[in-house]
Amino acid sequence: PWIYRDVEAALHDEPPPPAPDLAARKAALLAHLDLQCRWERDPIGPLRRIIVWYSRDLPHAAQFRDAIHRAQTVEAMRGLIETAFGAE
View: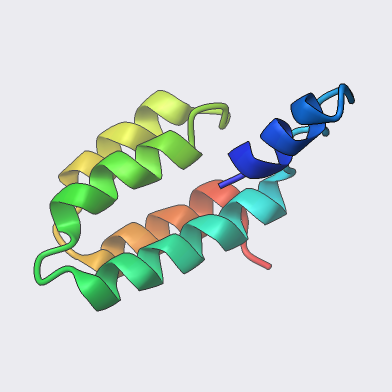
């Protein structure tokens, strides 16, 4: 979701903005999760791919990806996100 700000900076010959922090990534991911659940009849498969993308630089990312791929419900995925990205 941050590609637009990166493109805008490039179009203006500006350096790319800093990467979003963990809290911003978590907020965007949870919003994405909610939207996916609203529009997909069975969101589990697409959510696995989406969640993995948001988590690529997390510590213990491999274990997190494995847990996400084993999760059977959106609620389980949300709990894993809260743990991996930190509770607010």
